[in-house]
Structures are given as structure tokens and as C-alpha cells.
Amino acid sequence: MAQIYIVVFLSFMALSNLAGAVEIEVEKISEKDVTFKLENKALKYTNIIGEMDGSYRELIRIDSKPSLYSAADGENYYTLKVKENNIYIDCLYSDFRSSTNGLRVRRGVCGLNKILDSEYVDWAFEYTNAWQAETSKMDTTSLLEKKEPIEISANQGPNIKVKQIYSKLSDLENSTPNYVIEAAGKCYSQGKINLYVVSRKQNPEENPIFLIIEPTGNEFKTHNLSSENYIKKSTPCSKTAETNE
Image (cartoon, rainbow, N blue to C red):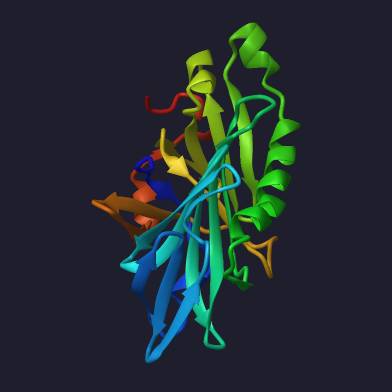
């Protein structure tokens, strides 16, 4: 599993996977099965890790809490929460390249409230296929034929806009765009970061969230980005293509 730094912008109170007072603990792992402990109750979920139908699935930890990871054509990260004495998938973060034009896609959705079962990788395609189709319509002709930088809209929220900047052909070949955030009439160059645009299922038109998830050993730690981080990196919007290498 590749180490990553996920960057996301917070526009609602907190990630929903942080909600809920009941903690999830891993009691036992047996081949493809995981037994979780919820207070004094043990719940066994079968066939949720290991190989299945061409996908690799793994139990990971985010902020010291059990989470899931899957890899096939791309990589998916799933956060978990407790609801009605069962375990549900709360958030999905996905990272893949467009099969049509090679653009990088890092998207996510929270508030899924999907009960955990062995088919969780399959139902994630509902979202990843839609993101794939959306990205496939974006035009990269100027960069491919004229070697001119292109700007790709990664988000068109009411208050915040996120752009991918592909300044040269190698940015597209390596799928390493620069990111620029535009808010309140100012642009903030973020460089070549792993930035995920994450919406909320119940209110998809709201501004997305941004968060840093930093790998530390076998665990991922999250860190909120404050507005001060962006103010220090402000750049004129007319020169957003001139981002850090």
C-alpha cells in the first residue's frame, strides 16, 4: 500500500467518522474475517479483508481507529462508525487516474451510512464510476498538442474553487498536478499535494472538506488545515500556472 498525504478543506463542523461515542476495537483477525468489539459486544464480519474478485483489501487505522483500504485500478479508503449496534462505512476516499485522459482523480464522500459487509468494494463503484465519467469529459488537447499548461476544475463549490494545474506534459504522464485553491478572490498555491475533494452525501452542493491524512508507520493521522496555511501561500490568481515544482 502506497504511503499518501491526503489533503482536504474543512467546510462543515467535522468529519462524520469522528462522530459517535462508541469506540470500535479490533478483537480478532482470522484470514479474511475481522471480529470487532463494541463496548461489551463482539461483531464478526466475514470476508472483508484479503483478496476478492481482483481487489486487495486491508484493515488499517486512521487516527487510531479501525478503517479499511482496497486497491484494484485505484485506491480506496473507508472510515467506519457505530450505528444501532452495527458497524457502518461513513466516508469513502478514492484515488485513481482517468482511463480516458490520464487526469488524476482524488474524490470522496462522507455520510454514507452504509452497513459494512463483504460487498463494500463493489458498491464503491457507484461513486468511482461517476467520478471517472465526469473526468473523462475534460479536455487535455492544449497540453498534448500545443504543450500549453491546462487548468482542470476539481471543484466548483459556491465559495471555494479547486484547480489542478498541469504545467508540462510530464505532469500529466506522472499524474502529478499542482493544486491551487481559490477563495474570497484570492488564490493559494499548494504545489504537488495529494488533495481530495470530499463532499457530504446529504448535502453535495455544500463546500467540500479538506484534510491532511499523514501516514505514520502503519497508521494514518489526520490534521486539519487552518486558513492561515493558505494565507501564507497566497499567489496572484492570474499566475496560478506558475506553481511550485
